[in-house]
Length: 260
Ligand SMILES: [Fe+2]
Image 1 (cartoon, rainbow, N blue to C red):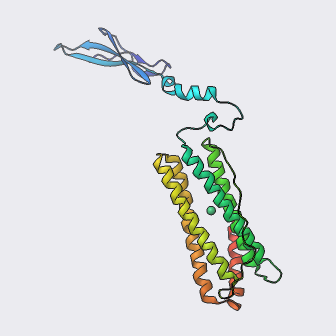
Image 2 (image 1 turned 45 degrees about the vertical axis):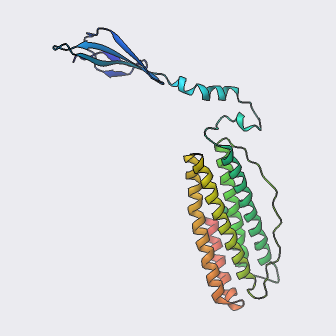
Image 3 (image 1 turned 180 degrees about the vertical axis):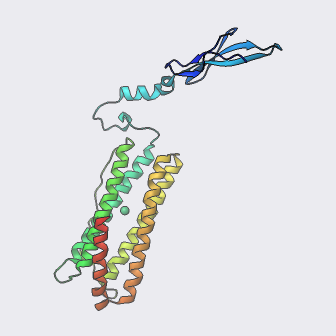
């Protein structure tokens, strides 16, 4: 087969140049590029084709996106006016806002617990530090979700938070175990909500969203296990001296969380 001069319109050579015995060029139009081929015949009279020129045309495929970007309004609350939005379903956007509210609610709840254990007549400062660090951690999760929402061109909508209880003493269980059991219930609820969020992401074939939620799910699974262990251990130690000793473990854990 004769070797042909080949170069793309950008000027980059594709094949080394030789003579051009082409009979007639054949143009193959595809969605994003045009392939120009030279038609030749070998000694047996068989027709051969050789690539001559490839012209990549990215813009026809991007026309829809270009129109959307050019017509988008500045500073508009309308999600349709996002510059970045692509394959981000409204269900996903709503789900992320709901999860932001839940993470904030957990943060609020843990903050209330922290302040209970910091009372002068409770004095479990390790528990206070642990729940303060937990509150910041949940607040940070809310921030991660808000950043994701912004990245995908969604709009963050904050909702009202319910006031958490301020007292956590329990006659039978004592305050430490009672608060930790409540924390476990919240962590498991959060785990369940993240699974539901993942279902939304999968339903709309949003690989970026599923990937993001999967990372949160992994961390949440660890959180559920950690708090489950604390519940089991607090059931063993009782309400008095055991809890006072356990408070030191909570203080150490809070320091680690602060460094994470
Ligand atoms: Fe969280």
